[in-house]
Image (cartoon, rainbow, N blue to C red; front, side, top):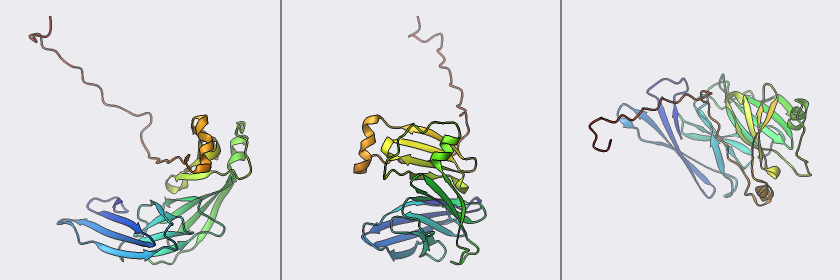
Length: 245
């Protein structure tokens, strides 16, 4: 992953190269200077089991980057010190969560338990590992929010149904949820409680979730809407063109 400086100023670019072999996780941190990429700083740690994996990496927060994992905690990397750190999850949180950067130097965590969402905030109080801990800032039921807006909940929930957290916007402004049983992607604006269905797979894909084949990857990004495209240039033909009669 390549990151600009946290304040967005020019001239500060950091490259983080991360890979995993069995239980060992290794990182190389490169900083781009006037003379090119400097010599990398390296860090190494071990995860609880070789099947553990790392997913989304957040932009730097107080000089640290944080990664969603599958082994019950958040993996952090201090870029300046080139060392890993572990950040415990809030009590009761499993693997079904995603992170987003918070304004004012912190991170949000959004978790789904069935149809219930919980939003947590972790403030980074300084450049040290010390922090104020997790604070529960919001919780609500997606199904109730969808129904209270006048929509009929057209899907018939069954035992074991759940909403997978696929992506979270900056400052936990919105979240995309994967309702795997029906191949449906829901958009939830966390501030206003607006819930919308934004995508639905073909019916013959719905049963594949049992085999782990229906997971939908979402990569949200901000853009101008409606989009503005440059005017198309008209082709001009000269009158002395032999192809013109």
